[in-house]
Length: 97
Image (cartoon, rainbow, N blue to C red; front, side):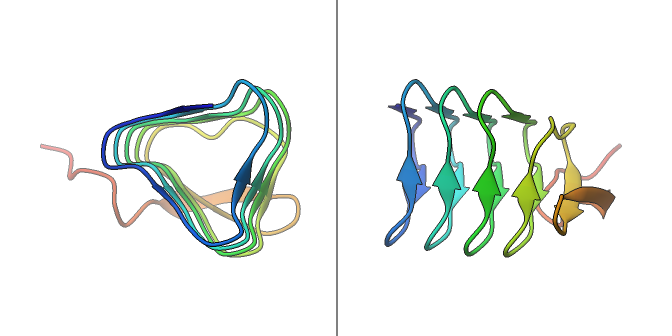
């Protein structure tokens, strides 16, 4: 796994082979990333979240606590549930101008 600057990997979070965590990405406690996952710049995976192999989370995307992400999330998306569904815009995404 490649870990970007200021990225956070919290207690009991794991990242399998060949993952890429962008700058300021955040894995909350208990997160599980399968292989070849990409978490973009500022991406966030909430407590106990799971991300399936080969999935890409766009820059500043946010997967809520307990979410099971089985497909790519676009930049700035807020996704929750099992399976995770986009329900809005991430609270961490930069404001549009």
